[in-house]
Amino acid sequence: MNLRMSEDLVDDATAEALLHVNRKSVEHYITVESKQEYLLAKMDAKLIVQVIINILDNAIKYTPKGSYIVIRTKKQGDKVVISIADDGDVISDEAKAKVFDRFYNGANKFADSRRSLGLGLSLCKSIVNAHGGEIFVSDNKPRGTVFTFTLPRGEVQIHE
Image 1: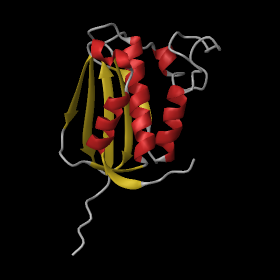
Image 2: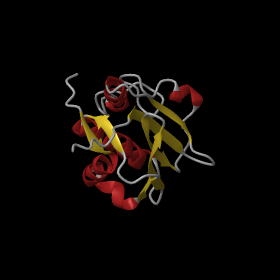
Image 3: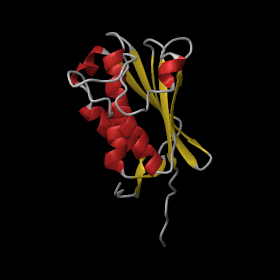
Image 4: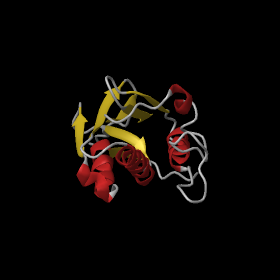
C-alpha cells in the first residue's frame, strides 16, 4: 500500500468524512467529541477519511433510524485514538472475531454477490495496520457497538 504520510489534523479528517457519509445519515444523530483541539496524527489523510466513512456507513446501515452515533478523538501517549460508537444492536462475540475478515458481513454469513463484497472492514484494518495502528471492536455500554482505531500521534513542528 502506497501511503502519502503527513501530519494532519484529526478533526479535518473527521469533518471531511462527515461530508461523504451515506445520505441516510440525516436519519441519525451524529456528533463529534474531541478531548483536544489541534490533535495531529501521522496519516495518509485520504485513506483515514475512507476508514471513518466506512465505519460510519456501517453504523448508519446497521442501526435503526434515530440512533445516536458518536465520533470521539483523543490523545493517548504517542497514539491518537479515534472511536465511533453507536447505540444499535451489540455484535456477538463470535461475529467480533470475524468482523475484520475478508468477505464477512454483519449478517453472520459470508457475503455474496447480491450484497456488499464484505471488504469494507477488512480494508479498514489493512489501512490502519499500514499506518502502524490497531483497530478493534467492542461493546458500547449499555447498548451498541464501538469501533476504535489508533494512529501514530503527530507533533507541531515550529521552525524559527
